[in-house]
Length: 230
Image (tube, rainbow, N blue to C red):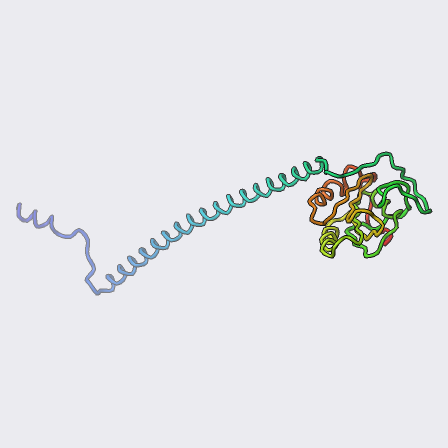
């Protein structure tokens, strides 16, 4: 009895399909399908982890880039504000200039003028570069609106004229014209304010534009610089 019981314990508990039989082929197919599904699930998990990682890096990069741009913009704004408050060596100023509109020619004490009575129509000053002199009375009205007027005489070189012209063309509320009678090679004028330089390379030109284009000297902030006389 004992021997028979031992033999019984060694019998297989389930019926195994015969190799090559239809049941065996189905079992192999199910095993392969299960293996493919498991491999696909592993790939999906890896792709999901990779996608999350890349997205996180991109989000952090966007946040970092946006922060840098904001800080850079603030730095430039603060730098411009500091420049606007800083004095510029060589700048001359005049106070209590009259602002009456007149139709007649005006005799100004400065050459070019920086303020005083002027024509009711301003000279268009939206980055305009004039190749001929413009009337003082129209130009002074533009200064009243916050424009910077760049003038030059025969001592200015072609390079000076091109550099200044490019600067003016890129700057609204500015204009440029020849002024043969001025003493300095290049003169920058704003209302009640003037700077004379010898070369377009002078760094004070950039400072003057930063400080006085629509600057604190402007008598009529927001007034138009377009649709004036040409």
